Image 1 (cartoon, rainbow, N blue to C red):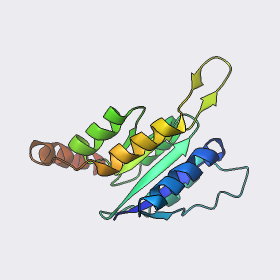
Image 2 (spheres, rainbow, N blue to C red):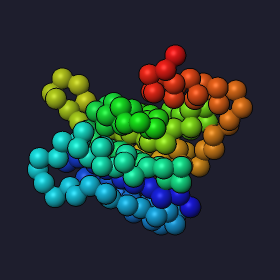
Image 3 (spheres, one colour):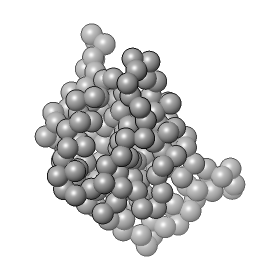
Length: 155
């Protein structure tokens, strides 16, 4: 089984615990490389530490209120291909076609105008889909090479 690194901010504590419990029950090795025992948990710091651990034998799950911030940060880290999955189909195609190695999920957030809501059952289905879907390869390989060239600032 793959190692799974989990990072989360103060908005996602409960969901991160449920995800970890779920993954442990399925036999995954779960790691929390960032110490979240602070109220000043800025998600860029969390993402940097978590993504530094990801390799070809591991994946990361990042959680914050909306999932947007952790996804944007993860995609700035060399070698990361993060997806903000709001449904199982996002997780499926990100793994199947882009070989995503980082899953970002919004745990829930409201600013009084707009709201992000995700029930834990749906979140776990997204996680399961992400982890059970294999990369298709083939025609997608050339696209991943082009992504890497962009990342390396090559044309």
